[in-house]
Length: 428
Image (cartoon, rainbow, N blue to C red; front, side):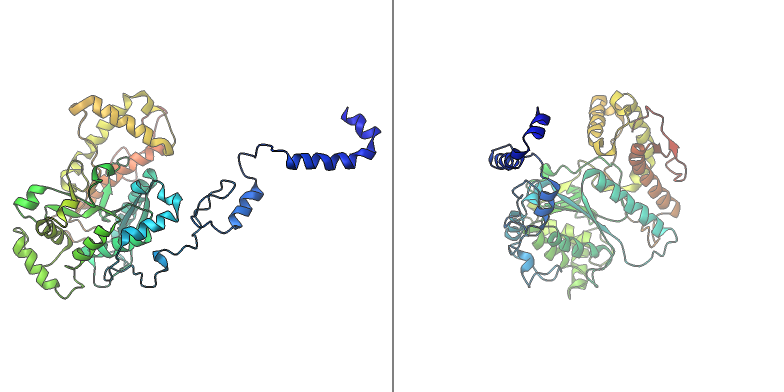
């Protein structure tokens, strides 16, 4: 029929076409569910809306920075530890209001920080070890959806060694207003459970989470009552104030030597009159009962910073125990994409609960090689063999958890060169 009309009545084609276009334009047809490429391109060229919301076509333009003034426009803004920031909670909340796509889920957002010195290692294998330790952190953050900032610049020339972390944490809080938590992890610490996430809900009433033992802190007044090399700190004004006070005991202050004497006289087992970050943290817990202590969570229900010497000898047995459990769960023998490994990790946890105490010890979350100093190679009290073999074993233990998603594993945790392909139904 259409063919006959075209052939017999050409005089009406022009008018009919115009009429059809007018009907098509004016008729309330349903809009397409997805924008066209032209609409997407056009929306990207459109300036961001005042509150950084989606445009008329539902295209997310929130990665643009709106023109509304925020704390970043303050010429007095400073990232340094020496210049305080006031009203940080208000400033951060205001920034999130202008960036609603980041406001969603902000309470669970974590940025992981780590770092090392800007110069080459003295230890001949130090740079290699730091590279593998860095890869471990990259893998953990990729798997769990965390951002990672690895710093190798001295943000304060006088705050070196263990004090260097505080200026980095302070700067990261300002650089990442979208993150609720900053997670500092020393360079010599290894994530040895690649699927574990800190239980943030547990810390809803606290602003600093550190591994430690209350009896060592409050009864024995021991400087090793906590480990300051791994901690979670909330991105808030309390933390800004705490970092300022904590840093006030550091080497950049005129009272540095005095603080060394105070800490040595306060902490019964501290042998050297040098002010260090860990002793300073214990001191603040002891003396700041109302201002600081009540907001600091001492975590010892899992290994937030496990002492390596008590862990590495059991890693092979842990690996065997995991594989034995996993082989008994049919779905864990199914190959799967890395991006859905969280589902399978939950199945492993369920298998562990069902098996009870007979299932062996759980994986340590973080194994910290305190005292090994992989870059300098100076480790009084420990042998090269103990430190370097321990680090290799822990890294390979963690790396096997990653490599199994890629079809391979190291059968010997002390042999990084040996790699074997997995059979089809081998747990990944």
